Image (cartoon, rainbow, N blue to C red):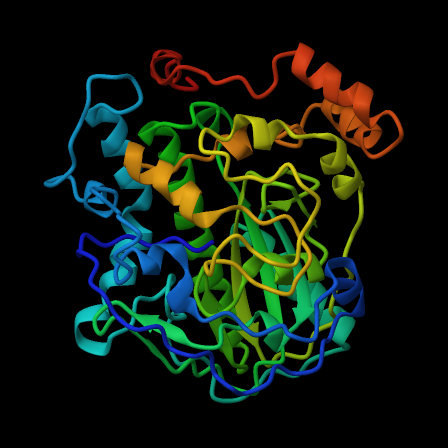
Length: 410
């Protein structure tokens, strides 16, 4: 799912048919086999994203969710995790990402980072730099991405199946054309980890600060990386939740596997990441999908399903038909019910992310014994590891007041 914020009220509008232009032939056969992409597959129209539906579909009531990101309209509560201190930190974490998304909306109908890719770049060098081999170029780009803030970085060919059929305009409440330059043949995928300790307080507005801060660091990384490539004399476009579906691209780029909770599960951070993209014409070597046992583990683990307060995560086997129009059809996978999920968000006026907190892959992997547990989770000992995870108390919620009282690192 994609996320964006706006205090506007929803109105009704008629659905717009997907762009009839056919998707390019699949570029990643492994992904096609893994998720059984069926012949009836169509690219996703961003208008059907649950956060966009909340602005035009009367059946999706956002209540005060979007307004809560404006401190002048936010309603605070005395319950811990939802006080003014908590909302203040959450909204500060979101500030840069939300502010940049609103810059060009009034004048250019662009909500950059959530509906439209970023255009806030300098021109770059007029002449391309002399390149070495594609392997050398790819290595330098990854090195630069890590320096600029990426926790991990991968490269994939741009598979048009994951590019949105159309964008969505909050101003007109209609779909609009998506124009991604055809020269962009590769995508650089970066993941940025969210704060582990703060994420233990989900669901709370305080925990939402981890989400917002993750997006902010993601934004800084992709903007800087795109500018670096432009400075080399090549084309590059920075992107967050806009333009294309990030999770299948990140899987193709070798950054992780797909989990029952509908999220990318990375080896280094579990599901506790935000994903960013840079589209480019720079000649690069694509990575290959990776496997470390997530699918097999998710088949025996249902902690996210049991932890979801609105039963939005399926117990059932992966299906090709989604529960509603806010998810891809004709792709066999576990699919979260976006309508149920968003209904809980609106009831609390903040991000939930219980499914991230309780996931057994959500760990601090700087500790060697945790890395051993991850390795064993990819073996036939996975059921034993799941029982151990529960017995040791991983995934339990930490009271937000406990996070505040713990004090600073100094």
